[in-house]
Image (cartoon, rainbow, N blue to C red):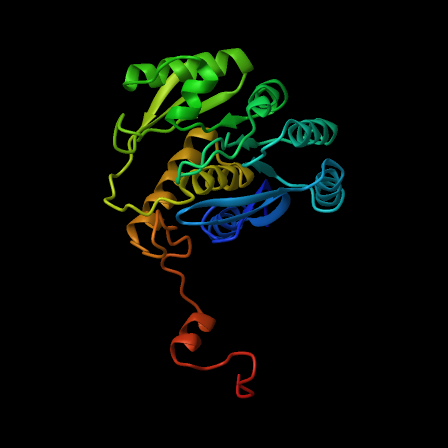
Length: 279
């Protein structure tokens, strides 16, 4: 069993953040672990409160994982303050972590800001140089590259600027009126496009968290970067295509699409697998 550590914030509605990371890692065949950077009060319509972990407690969580079950990959999601970012960078360097996927979560799908202004500078200084892969969406890539992104050529340019500046691979995610679901990977000085299947589903809460966790899961299993991206995009498309519809805003996808098994079947038949003595 390969393992992966998610360092991110909790989503009380279960569609993004740590909850999406664990669901995704499970469905992609790795053992998921967590270091929680913040608790959030949020649902499909917005973020209503954020309570950060203390830097000391975040460090304790990361240390506890690495010193017992060393992760084969690390996914970093929402980190809203410079102090927490510095702790993450320090511990990942100390443990010489590999297969680090950084999803620079700056704005939630609902439009709510999730990162303090000064934290962006710390993120670029401390974490981007450590990352195996950075997965910004269009607004995040524009901010990190310092250019406007209006078309596919701009996506390639932004990926190259970010990758060359910080020495990491970059997956600039499409959408945001640029294209349907086509992403461009800049790695080893080359750009490679990954076409996505357009799915007419307004419920996209947690798509970024899910994609980056799926990539990290596949890196943990030993797939190369391009294959990991391909497999992750296929998983994300299938989860969206299941057309789960929860909440009144931008709802979550079904991470557990197609899940079958004894307990699922028993639940459908109103059988309690714990108390049924015949099983």
